[in-house]
Length: 424
Image (cartoon, helix red, strand yellow):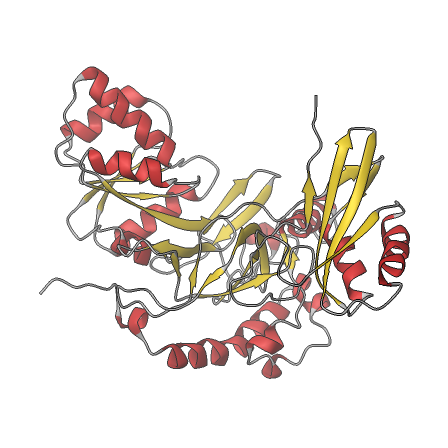
């Protein structure tokens, strides 16, 4: 009998899974507090009390910009040098680390990411299995093996399901095509765009790839039109959603209904610019808590927009689902020489409990901007617009018009700041 799921964890009763995740949280908070960065951030937090999503939501979100700033400060501090900014529990001798990292990577910024030990450290095996990869397959991996962890994340998942891996890396299209044909690769791992380049090159050079039937894609958007284009050429491809900081977050299944969240993480969706979870179905920033102690990121803000998809996957996988990548959460705009960011819009909303949701629209030409804050208010008391306008001036140091809207009238797309200006 052919296995339909990676393991029994994928089909657990949702209540059982939730209880297990929440029971694991206190230990993860304690592991985080053992690192210098979280020791300061969580100094007043009782780790044992962080045993629910509500308690987790009271912890601060750590965003990539803050991670970069702390890493830069840690690298500049000669007395207490720490290239990870105090967030990692592993490292190497020069750091004075008690536990050693297996690898360290560099992502743009630069931000450095440690890799710990254990089989499938990045937990990518589930995504590989859902994409159809099985023991004995040859997986052609065209993610970069240079500096960043992308290729290693995927390779660890391929090994977890028993695949042999060809480390193609990026570029060298002719050589990669030759290898895929001569080695009879069963599947492709990499970006959607390079897979298309590879297949177009194969067609142009009349190189047959009859064994290439499956693909696990990541790193870029994967539109339905390209999915269908690949299917017409006999190749079934699925999306994975992973980051260099936290590894696999979610993966696509044969149901093609959103992405199933990985078993080793807790995912929240928060309103951009805040630490506050949004109602189910509302678009916001993806925030991830990783459940391993070596690099114990708590409430890590990915900067990506998504939303929770109601219900469970028809394939029997019972974990939470998200809608996939819906854009970026960092919507900072420069208006009349001043930076305005989503956190400022959130501060205006906090000052007026009558407001349920807000969206700042920036229009006009550069250097001749105008701002309009659209706010949803069910029962707007007299003078609310003027009071909100005063808050906008106080928080942003800029003047803006206020438009009161009916609840539910603003788009559910995660945008807090919409920049409609024409540039150039």
